[in-house]
Each structure stands twice: as C-alpha cells, then as structure tokens.
Length: 80
Image (tube, rainbow, N blue to C red):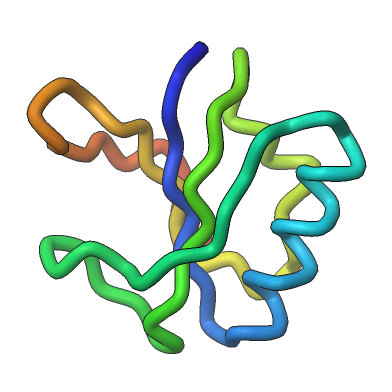
C-alpha cells in the first residue's frame, strides 16, 4: 500500500473526501496539514491505497501527494 495526503480549500471538502474514501473501503483519517505543505483550511486527509483515488476527491481538493520515505512528499495532482 502507498500512503497519500490530500489537502483541501475547505474543511468540509476534507470531511466529504474522508467519508468517500471510507465508503470505498480505504483507511483514511483527517489531520492537520504537515508544516512542509500548504493548505487553505489547514486540514488534510491521510490515507493508504493502491492508487491515488482521485475519483473520490471532493471538487475542492487542493493537492494530492504521495508520501515518500522520511516523510518527503511527491506532488501527484494539483487542482487549478
């Protein structure tokens, strides 16, 4: 399994995405955004899955990162 972090423009978008991921059987949790990443609302969703699960993201998703060893982050998706 790969670890991911999704950041959002709003807290509600993070909540909706967390619920959508859980409904799809993906283990996800809401948490504060790590300091090395920026976010408009300060809340992110950290989850583990085989793929980034972009289809489960709320439309207010800001960015999706793959979590690398040593808590380094690789940007996979950015909502413009």
